Image (cartoon, rainbow over all chains, first blue to last red; front, top):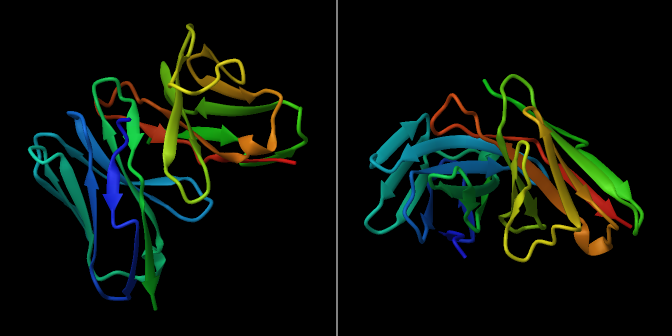
Length: 110
Length: 116
């Protein structure tokens, strides 16, 4: 299976703390994307990082990509209760067929 | 931006009946769409790739006769779950490639299917 793996599977932190999630994948990619999913809802696109990029920022989000290790990390700084959700990485190759990671369930406690 | 409208957002059906889910690109032409399934507390699993005007490509382990995909126009792909069973209850999400954007993609809001 090409599915990526994320760790941790679940993360519980206090509001204001930073949350870091990691994603590992198996095949070469064109880009990697991170998504958020609130319980029972659709996906919200967070950020896309291309294979020739190493780091990208968007507001409180910071994503890194290490293609040599086939891994990426998502950092959410100064977390809020509203950040509680599941987070998935998705890797895309030339076919634009995105394969999703196993996901990290983040819970931010107020 | 490119929007994909997925309908219905939820549906309850009886065992043995068929259910159709629509995925429509609103302001762009989608030559390729993807259908995913997600079980509770699990990740999204790609089911099939839908190509306009040709047969869908199914992932290993997905029954093509059970999950019928039709992509008859550049703006509409449908997934029909035939002879639904309770184990087909899941969250189904479509995704479309936005052709003018090299890395383009956009996802529908998903359909919660419950088979009773």
